[in-house]
Length: 390
Image 1 (cartoon, one colour):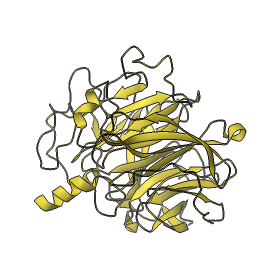
Image 2 (cartoon, rainbow, N blue to C red; image 1 turned 60 degrees about the vertical axis):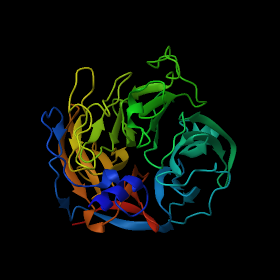
Image 3 (cartoon, helix red, strand yellow; image 1 turned 180 degrees about the vertical axis):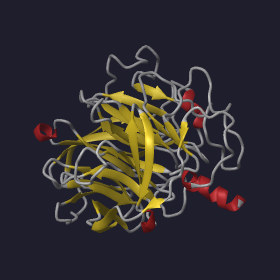
Image 4 (cartoon, helix red, strand yellow; image 1 turned 60 degrees about the horizontal axis):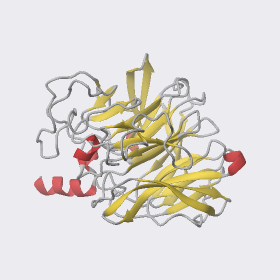
């Protein structure tokens, strides 16, 4: 068991088929104080949706993003960006992608398109970048020609760079005003830095499309913290904007137990590693408990974990009963997790596709109203999720 836990700590929530630390799946010791709602760990539901393969042969795909014309951009963690046609044809790798640090959980990670894509053809990539001191999350923007990236510019770098291969975060979400949220992991072995505003680890930043800090960010008068929106995060790999309120919602990996659904608000501290609903992989306690004055509680948490990655609000009608739900990918046990909301709280959780035995890394809603997921493996696929016809 010690050997297994040691291997898990090295692998993290990486794209290898092996289970990650956040993929542990084992329940932690129940917390002494429970203030957030806990997942009931529902069983897998069959017979409601089915998943058909759109394309395969991808190496550890990490993200999928639809273009206005119905094509989709798909990232592969080793450093490739592909274009997927509506008919399922996969392009050759797009040229001009920045050099990535493809080790551990690092590599080419998320992709987002500019809100003004029709006018400027810009896309944004998050990735692990090596440099002095180790590696960190970086964000680049570029003009997409259809086969190449041109005018590539790095607009944000997580500092300082640190040794270790885990916890890059790296989800990209545009708000309604065209500002960009970037999630930054705690880099795994450096968790205390999530509480340090002078460090880029364990934060969510909010920047302009050129990388500048907006004037209404909460810490513009604090050295090195001008871009920070919220802090005290562990490893946010799921993020999406609520379609009605415009509020950012996230799901982050906990340790052994303690994956969290949050609504990160301006300037607030989400507690990691001072408070958490999880424990360390050894079973040791982390921090001071499950609550502390001045630190935010999650909306909902999972113990055992789902190892979250990828997130979307379902705004279509092609799958009956799903409209308004949050959809989250699960790496372990492997599922598409659906959360129903009412008044800002989770009222129901349903899990699907567990029978596939796949690590679901990202989730998107396609222009046809169906749900598309990417499976994280050396022979990864894009799957189209559709209702089972009666």
